[in-house]
Amino acid sequence: MHADHSPNTYQLTKIARSRRSLLLFAASTVFLMLGNHIVDAKEAKRLPKPGNLLAPDAALMRLLEGNDRYVHGAPRVDDFRRERPVLVEGQNPYAAVLSCADSRLPPELVFDSGLGDLFVCRVAGNFANDDTLASMEYAVAVLNTPLILVLGHDHCGAIDATIRSLHQDKPPPGHISSLVTALAPAVKASREQAGDTFAQATRQNVIDNVNKLRSTGPILNAAVEQNRLKVVGGLYRIDTGEVDIVS
Image 1 (spheres, rainbow, N blue to C red):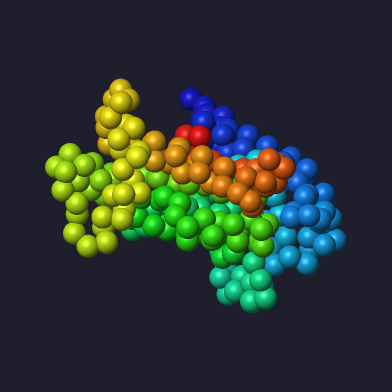
Image 2 (cartoon, rainbow, N blue to C red):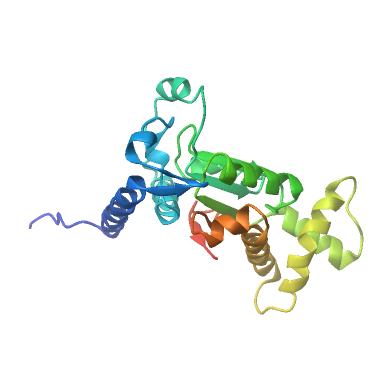
């Protein structure tokens, strides 16, 4: 009886992603439009983390590879003592994440990232208001971040509270009502869709905020039109840890 040494599905997926990521990284680091100038390889070396200089598609692939490691319990081993001094004078994150504030959803862990890799904004319900829009504009215009991910998740308490509030026609206490106001459009739209209202509202909320970020001027929409920025949506599955891209 011979042992089967053929690679399993996870290994094949990992190899394919690594090869694609390497090609995308090579293409993105030679000349990449950042703001209104071109950064060449020599200038890239002066950045705190040159490896974070990625084209939008390569940045998304890197996020998904990190999530794949997280899902399968195979994280990198980072020496934060080495990373901290490098980042004292600046940062160049390869992705920005607008995620829910839920304690079960820490983006840095979900995407197996190091210090200075992700520019993260968190608010219950993962929606874009003036503050988060300004933060994302800073990430794109100043830090030259090529990717924004709007990350929702199943079992979201903010979505559940909004559904209950609208169903009972009763506002929640305190400032929680501001969350309901922000999430109400997605919940109302989900009522007209087939399937589970909770799941549909969660997904619709992600899609709505992706569209909002893509279309908001003058910074974000211009970067999208110039192919310097990609804005995508994702859904995190609490039971498996997996992130599915939805838009």
